[in-house]
Length: 113
Image (tube, rainbow, N blue to C red; front, side, top):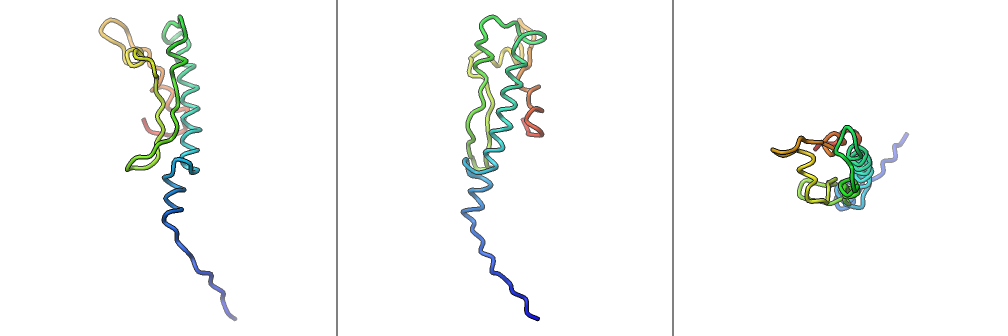
């Protein structure tokens, strides 16, 4: 009885693209999770018990950005593009905080913030 063994060819470049490439499946999954966080953050910024919505500028400025790569791997940012977004999230000495981004993180399904 003979056993046929197939050779295994390891391709580091392909593995790197799979795990760390901005167009690979890991990046696509991260972007899908970021989109869920974006959606939840927009709901959180849509009125009571959150900030009083007058124009909707804060809500429309919440964006999940495309996947990027750094020395550690693939990541996706979800952020507010309006200049006062951080003040609403954390509050100031004159106004109480209305967190909308940080409470949305669990919608991403176990990602870190």
